[in-house]
Figure (cartoon, rainbow, N blue to C red):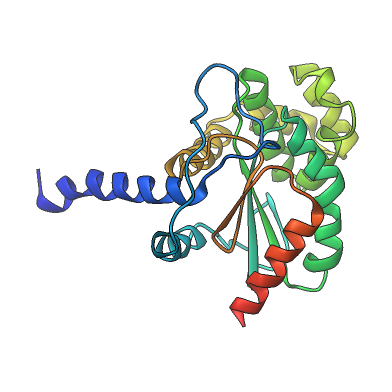
Length: 238
């Protein structure tokens, strides 16, 4: 084994440990699976630990102009990364009550970019919905699918195959055969795995969880918490 390869697991472990401490994803408004996978609340990091770790977390912003699961300019000064699950009630609350206001106020004027990360933690239907959202994005209908899947009462109907097709129709997906093929294809799984591995690597254990220019926020907090974080990130970016 080469020296560089032998060092890689150690570096990854150190990075995960530091990021997990900084994230401190303990919020009464965040939801976690009930099968024991969720980590216990972590203590907050000291200022000395937080600054370098936040810089590393900020690098997770992909800023890919072709990202179908993102809204806002790729060069926006502030990037909000959202780790979310379509079966998560608080994720739906954020999607309905808070995200539209952030888009109206900050995405529209070029300040904010929102990048979605599929982070299904509630089983097979969560994963199926994540792949369906990705597939809708292939036809530029991710935003519409996202809105339909998070509409009031939607998650209670489940995310079986027929329901996902119904949501695709509601979202205006034009080619349903392509949608079904994309949803079941290897690229959808690869995209989902990429998002999941990123989340687990930095210590995400509940949804919704957010990074705003590397600053962690856990749970569907009030709009004021997000506007304050965006304003602070914009000021720091200047």
